[in-house]
Length: 95
Figure 1 (spheres, rainbow, N blue to C red):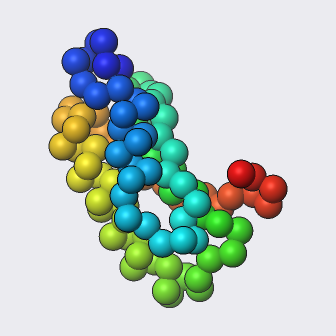
Figure 2: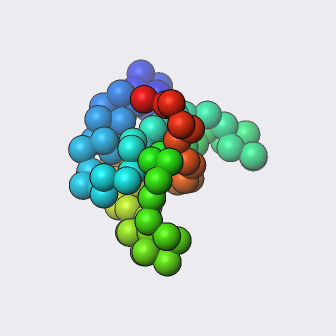
């Protein structure tokens, strides 16, 4: 990505995402780059939740705000690439 677009590397962006303030029940924010359904290159940010996290009514507002901050960061750092932000639970035993 960096060579083709003169943008930050995926690793640098990953570091910025991991530095975002987040609750303890968010284990990680993972970033990948791959085509979307239209075949256009896109960024995929995965908010990885701990196996135990707050009830949905409590977690949703926090996750919505985190998603917004992730999208803003990526839009500022990599304009022109669409960022998809998804949520998944870590599997028990993941580190």
